[in-house]
Image (cartoon, rainbow, N blue to C red):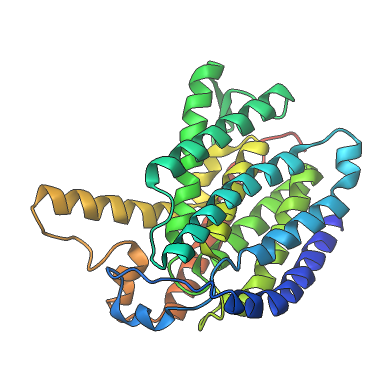
Length: 328
């Protein structure tokens, strides 16, 4: 019940905040600059307010503090740890968005700075989870229901780079109206259901709150978008997704629930690598994958619905793979 209440509360807060935030962003001229290398018709989106991720971020903070208080009072701090890591990632995105707005182009923080800041945040988060006995260095393998024991140092390096990769994969997926929000909404529902199945309410409250907050945000972000989440929102989402997986000690589940994030990232890597190796040839019409489909005359709505449907299917598969992680 608390998960549902957190979701409903976050939905209302996100929707109400959006009603006031979008006009405020327009007044501040916080418009999105569109990359020249993207599809030509995306230039029509130039000037759409960005940093709309503040809507669901505010909603999640409020809902987690209200409905997660009982868990924190009982010494279960996972939800607060997940929220803190997500906020740090969102703050990195906010700085990036602010720099873009100030310079009136689509370049903010350098890739190097983003990587270092995210890596430092990931190491701190993982160390905090481990020191409070919420995370073990034993890597759980879905479907076969076994764990592979690892040295903590090895696990920490592996986990930190997985988290940084996940954060940036979600960021890359945020390229169409409603895409990152819709896909991540499904992933949040998965973690909410899984936490209820395992009776791990703390993470479930966070997952439910984020699902509700995203639903409120999508009222304004679904095609045609009235606001974009910006790096503020997409990095927050990336941080939230990987943090929930590690807080529940099932990081490999990201391979399934994050299948769209992975496909988007791999399409970009393959395109760049092939382009360099062949001195100018391309596999995809344009990377990442959603742009390839756009140039194949898929509408934005069709792409979003297809990717969301694929995520639903893989989340159901993931649930089957990890449902016996803990004794019920």
